[in-house]
Every structure is written in structure tokens, then in C-alpha cells.
Length: 159
Image 1 (cartoon, rainbow, N blue to C red):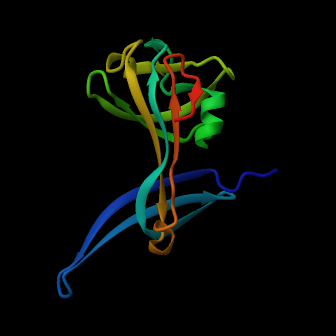
Image 2 (spheres, rainbow, N blue to C red; image 1 turned 90 degrees about the vertical axis):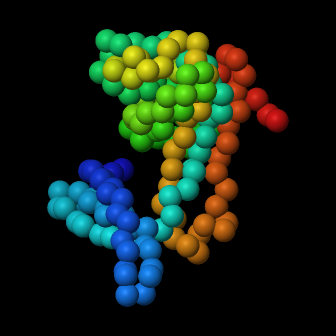
């Protein structure tokens, strides 16, 4: 199976059309598709796509080169793919950061903060992991984010 694109970069722009007093929330998508760069304006709203709620950080590894390692079972349940941008919200100390997800062993319960982010988030901290999606106005009303709750061992629980 061929991957659809090699690289995507989104720029957020706030455009104000003064003559009509319209504020437009737009994003510039720069996509490398089959080796060729394409530039598109993307209109829409950025909404929560998935959330892993109150996970416990099992390790903070300063010597690893960036990212967050997440138990593959949790990634699957939250529909997070490897290399996807993830926002990490630390409930314990209030810090927030963005990084990318990499897979940890299935069923391990591992949530490992890697690289420089280990200065901001420590082992034992409670965190919320979020991903986002850009939707057209017509899609917003029907969107329901995937919310995953976990216990103190980062195993999925039903509420």
C-alpha cells in the first residue's frame, strides 16, 4: 500500500476582510504528494479528534530524541497513528506541549515523555493527550471526538 502523501504542514492564518467585517479562520496546507509540493488554503474549524484522559506518565527519558511513547492499545483506541502530532496537557504541573506519537508495546500501559519535554513533564504526572482534526462547517455538527479514560495503570476503563 502506497502512502498518500510524504509531508503535510499547516499554517494557521487569521484573515480579516475589513470591508465586510468578516473574520476567516484559514489554514495553509503545504502537502508533498507523490514527490510534488501542493499549496492549498484549508477552511474549517479545528476540533478535538481524540483524547486519552488522565493517563499516568510512566517514564520521562531525557536522553531519547523527542516524542511521546504511547501504549499501542491506547493509540488504537484513540485513533492516534504513529508520527501524529499530539498535544500533552500536564494536569499535575499545568505545562502544555506538542510532540509526536510513537508506539510503545501493546498492553504495557507505557506513557513515556522523551527528549527535552522530559524537563517539563515528570514520571508520575497525570496528563491528557489530545489530537485535533480540521473539519468543514458542514461536518462540525456531526463530529464526536473519541474520548478514552484510563485507570492508574493506563488501562482503558468504561465510565
